[in-house]
Length: 337
Ligand code: KG4
Ligand code: ZN
Picture: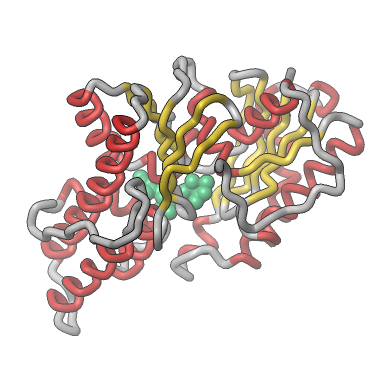
């Protein structure tokens, strides 16, 4: 069964065709160039660019897969969470394809797409497992008992991890999106110069996260080091490296605690921040030491893509689910209980 997937929840227009667990084509058009000068995503500009790109990407995805629109058996589209205007562009395109071809139409939660992206690799994923979702909008830990069965164990109490990377990069004048930039610069600095301690808060779930304290600590150090003028390059690199170390420490500590607490030998990492080389290396080391199995998708499946949406749509169709063409978009929607 071949599924067309469409993803337009934020600043990537993406279209893919997936057959079971095989990606036949996956096209992604990033909008980073148009949002960079604003230091973050401008929703109206995102919607307009999706509108300009969606037909081109649909054409490209069919061309790359050497298929025509008559060769697909269903359409899956991200319906939540995300920017409403952006989501509606993808939703409208997906409805048009499903309506004209009279094929099943399925709305997919973007977070569920990320959590299942790993299935599109050859690796066998054991259930139950712990999934760490780290993206620009979310930082959450789930216990996944089987496909579609997610228990939310903890989440960030303030900024998402990717959001903290982006905000720190903006503060230091490094550009947007900040995650890949900080990832590239961090190895050039000394991560032990500044000790950014994880925050202590009361009443939190033992699996929650917090990044805003680390971000504020970076800001205070930046202010005192620059003293109203320019910061030395060495200080800036040390700040970047120390920030990344603190953010990684928080993520790794919670995910390992969750795996041990739920006796899960398998950890899965998903979302844009999973592309971070420092995080991948640290997770690999610590899980090997703890006897845990870690699976992190290749970079193109970490960041936003439509293959993960097509896969989830295909799995739900197998379970007998399909949506009406009056399905609406939603800006906010968690997965799990
Ligand atoms: O999953 P994603 O592509 O979009 C959302 O659903 O949010 O994640 C985007 C986020 C951005 O905040 C970006 O800075 C971050 O992922 N990111 C990274 C890296 N690559 C992307 N953060 C740290 N290191 C990276 N290499
Ligand atoms: Zn995402």
